[in-house]
Image (cartoon, rainbow, N blue to C red; front, side, top):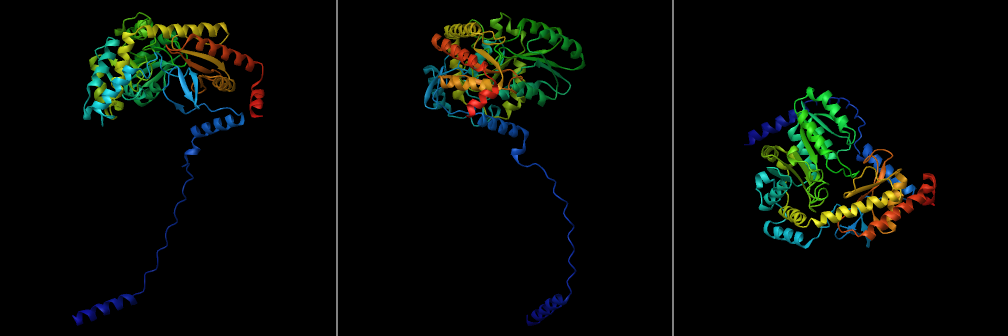
Length: 447
């Protein structure tokens, strides 16, 4: 062992005497490009920042993400003060209804707060099927699918049925979810001027033959304008040009028609002429999520291929049960729909008499007061809130340039006095603002 130790020591000594190889000079690293890695450099954020700075300069209140307390309906708690609320989708006054609350609580106790995974893998619960059956019955369709997000329902439906060789044609004012779904589908996209079905027909005549499948999409009741299309003409055009027809009836359900069934009832058109009835549960049905009603094959395809359904957790059973109960109450109490219509028509008639610009609103649930200029719109909203009325300002790019507005959502439970008072207040404030320039308004606010 001693010999081996000596040999090892000698070897280590020889290694120490071997001159070290000259160090290799590291190659110079290429310069790192000056990429923008900060989120604050995104143009979208720069726009938000500009809006906040502008509001601060003008001493204007930023209306976004205010903290509300309690239930949202015909009134709301904002800043520990109750105000009359015209910024709620609670068209039928059902939010917080004791029967709806009881249905949700019972489902929560039975099924828990989550279904844990996608319905395709974690399984369905009876409230899902009950809700879908009621919605299918409303539109006289074979089946229905309920998503946990209305936006995802729109995106996923378009992306499932259309591909790069296909065509989607939509109203220029269509909801964002349809636009995003069209982009994801890869289909060619064309739009026609708002509610201009002559332009739609001309577009289809010129372009339909260049594509495989085609889909026409529009809304039953437009959320920014309170108007809608001629459904019978749309059905005629879709048959003539071999297209699918999809109607976004999110704001129509519970609002349009004698019993609130939607656009088809309002215009006395057979709902079978529409291939896909799309809507959301967050309006008249006081829940959260979306639905698509259609024939059995279409729904079967969506249940197995719609990414926002297959790859997303299922709707909580408590939400499904609550919205199903709301739909049952809508059917059982049509006087709610009648009161909503009466309140809406009262608002529209009085607003027009006061010289307010309500655009082409039909007077059902949604009525805009179009101001045009952004600053005046913000000041109008701010002063109305100070007077005890909450109406939300809609500004570009949410609406076209120079068409900023307050959007008033009416409810079956608003009183005639609340409606008259808010219209009168809006007319008075706008008359005051019309006499001064925007610069004067900002200067006065900033002083």
